[in-house]
Structure formats: structure tokens, C-alpha cells
Image 1 (tube, rainbow, N blue to C red):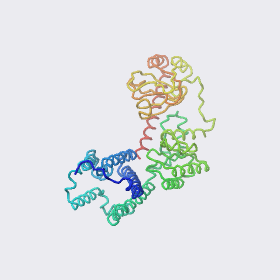
Image 2: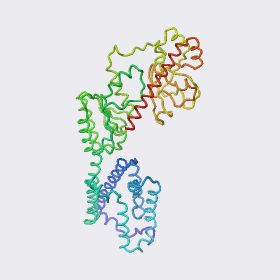
Image 3: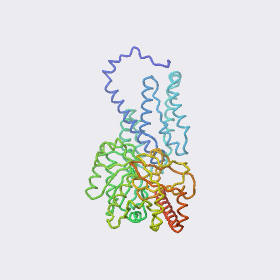
Image 4: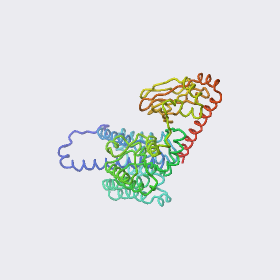
Length: 479
């Protein structure tokens, strides 16, 4: 047969009047089933196999390819490589097999008009059945899987049974129902990926010893819930119920980490607003971290949203520190330019050291130093905040720490003379610093050797505290 179909002589108007509504309904139904199927399989890839993909990108790609194949009159070729990855994940990750699978499907679609009519229908049907059986994940044949996941296993085979008995349209309807239930079941059952109720997580905001000592034992007032999966009404309702059940009387701050939630529907956002309102009435402040920008816009102002979990933790820590009695808060006079490195230094020696400090103004988004720079100066924040990241600007790198007034940074290059290992700059607003060069410090140390030992001891304690914070954060992530 010809490669391109012959569309001449087709009574399009009569066909549309007689079967138009049925064809439109069938097309919409197929689109719904395909969309839900892609969401289900992408969620299964992430939750069960750790293969995180972009469901929206996959959906757009498959939809576009289906439209192009339909317009060209070819056999619809599904890029089911995304589904094949589930089977391939059982044997190990592979990049080539899904591409071969999609390539074969496209090859059949392009060349099928030349040779498919020569293939006996029985052989073609048998081949399709065998291909379909090969696409069934190996777990679906396992009795152990059937016993452990009875609902999902039974629903999956129900679709196959309906397809065999009632045909394609019945299978589409059954697939729509089953895909919906599978999506809701998997999402609700695994919506909470991690729950941390005892203050295991801390922000990367570094604080002085007194503030950190007061803050650490009170971090158990912060509950962090890490979410995952598509968030619909039923899933959000289950989430709200679980959050209320898990909270303890001591909790005063709740953070919902939505970094692994690819999509929210309007009903789920309504549930989120209700949860935030109910917690607020109980005296519990709630925030959502890493909320999708579109979802954050529709959630409204009553839902407090932060760009990432670190910012949300910083917000909770600031709330805890605000409860500190005034008499216990550290006094930070403007003349105390040395900050934490000057603790315990005699006044005369401190005045002599402050005399050699050089002021440095940093504009918003300004860079203090970059990774690889060879300067060895020690810097102390006078006002504002400085962010340390692996690459500048911060959204292109990993945020390592944030330092505030009275805190020093750049101590590693100051002590060992090595090149800078990170970038530092003002991420949000302006900052004012003071700079201490190693040459000025060495000259001062020859005049005040005992005070210099105190400064070096302070730097060692600063490094030890920051190493302890990093170890604590790493342990929390690994657990």
C-alpha cells in the first residue's frame, strides 16, 4: 500500500454528523486515560524505583507524537519508553533500551504501510499479545507481589480482563477508573516520605555560640513533613489527617516540604489552606517549602511559602529565638567590630586590632569573593547577611551557610593560606563588613601574643562548631 493514506472521497461532513460526538468523546477519554497513566507510571518510577522524571514533559512529548502520527495517517506509535523503564529498573538502569524500544515503535509506524498488510492477522494479533505480555512488569507475575500489593495487582489485571472480554472502549473506561484509584492509593499511602518531629534538621544559617546553645534544645518544637507524589483532594485530605495525628503538644512550628510534589490541584490547595488555618487556631505556625510557583500563587496569602526547606527552617529558628528573654539576648554594640573572634580579648588589644580593620560595603547581590580567589583576608559581618555557596549566583550552586552580624567567615584561607573553596556574597540585601588581612594580623600578634592566641582559639572553636553543624545536617539527611 502507499505510504500516505488516500483521504480523497471521504464524506467528512456526513462522518462528523453521524459519529462526530462519539469520536470526540472517545478521543477525550483516551487522552484522560493516557494522562493518568503517565502520571501513575512516573509516580511509580519515583516512589518505587527512585527514577525521578518530568511527568509533564513526558505527557507533552507523547501527546505531540500521537498528534503527528495521526495527521500523517500512520499507526499511532506510543513512546512507551517511560513505562518500559519500570521493567528495566528491575535489571538495572539503562539508557539505551528505552531508546531502542521507542525507535522500533516509530519504525513500525513509518514503514508499516508497506509491509503490515502482508502479515497474516493471526500473526499480527499474536505478536501484539506477546508484545503486551512483555511490557507487563515482572513483578506483576510474582505471587509475593500479589500478596503484598493486592489492590494494585488486582486492579491492573482487571483492566486486562475487561479488555479481553468487552473490547477496547470498555478497557478505556476501566483503565480510567483503575488509574484514578491507583494514583490516589499510591499517593495517599506514600504521601509522607519522611517525618521529623524532634528537631533533627537545622538551617544553614550559622549563629554565635550563645544563640546556638539556646536554640538547639528547643528545635524539637519544629515538625518537618517531607511530601511526595501528585497532590489531589483525597491525598491532601489524608495528608492533613496524618499531620494532625503526628503532631505533639510541644510543636509550635510545622514545615511541609513540597520539593517532591510535581503538581497540586485546586481542591488540594483548598485542603492546604484549611490545614494552615486550623493549625493557626491551635497556636501552630505552618509554612510550605519549595511550593510550585503556580501552586503558590493559587494557594493565596494565607499560606506562608518559602523557596526551599532551608529558608523555612531559618524562619522557624528566628521564631524560636524571638522567644528568648531580652536579658538573655547578646548585646552587640556598634563598636564591637570583632564579633565572635574578639571574645575574651583584652580591651587594649581589641582596640589595637580594630584599628587595622578595613570597612567593606557589599551591595545587594554583590560578591565578596569567588571560589579559587587567592586572597587570605578574614571577614566579619557588621550588618546584613552573607551567603556562602559553591557557585554564584546562589540559584546555580549549593547553599553552604549564611552568616549574620558579628560572625566571621573566610577563616580557612586566613589560617592555611589556601585558595577560596566557595563563593560569598550578599544574596538579599546590602551588607557591611570589616576585613582583616593576614599581614595586619601577624603584625598585631607580635605586639599582643597572648591576645593573638585567644583569637586563634576563637577561630578553632568556630570551626569546630560549624563542623558539628555540618555533621548533624549530614546525619539527618542520611537517616
